[in-house]
Image 1 (cartoon, rainbow, N blue to C red):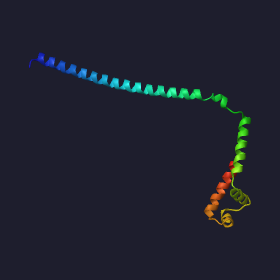
Image 2: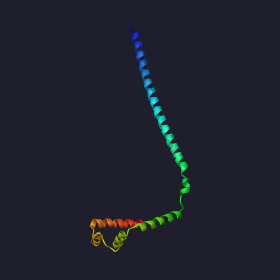
Image 3: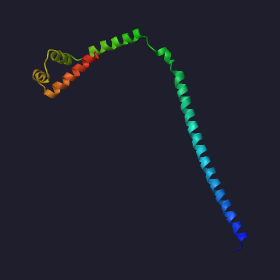
Image 4: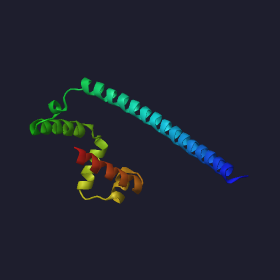
Length: 130
């Protein structure tokens, strides 16, 4: 083959490689653009949902409470919590305040030491909540 023909074939191969590379880049760009469009669409839908939700809710600033309102709420919760404590746990708490431990409680209440320990823990947490 003469050098001129070889050069022409080389240029044709090189051109097809460049076109193939360009085609690959173009396909990658199309996929990327399509993916970005989907993400933008999903974000737009999420934003619309959040806007609708914020329109339904009252202004958050109007929901802020003063310190007096907070104190009143805490007092109501504490009153309800102390009313919810069962007499059994009040009795256990009373015995624990008297200085009795889990072993003594288990003998008095006729339960295992582990159960008496659990009762002490529950009674203390109920008193703290009250």
